[in-house]
Image (cartoon, rainbow, N blue to C red; front, side, top):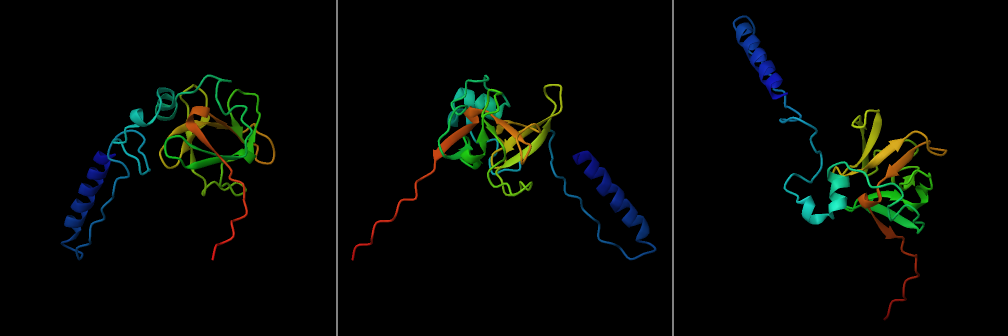
Length: 189
């Protein structure tokens, strides 16, 4: 990518020099590369200096940072039914509400939609989707938008109204129960 940008900038500057005899000199256009190295780049606030191996358990590290998968029917949140919010184990971003959780029978916690989804709009959620062909079939990987943690996959065979099935690894999640709305104590005078 950087070689391409360099070639384009040289070609633009040579044309500007050749035309400068006849036309007034133009300001060359510089193209800023999106990425300067190979591979997918993180768009998050976390970088390579974050020591995920110290922050996470070995199983959490393999699933979230190396795109692994936990053993089916082994996750702690598979049959979990408490009311609250599921957060990213790496950065604590809110990901899925317990109200969107359902039993898909697949062996992983399943959700109809991500927290913050408005109809089909996921721009206010803490997840991103990315094509994944690593297993030989076209799937869609689900990542945490804040830290690029691999969470699981999403499929189009879920229940109505969304038709989505977010199949998420339990080790990629932490759960925070909803606090009951307790009436405030009267202020003392």
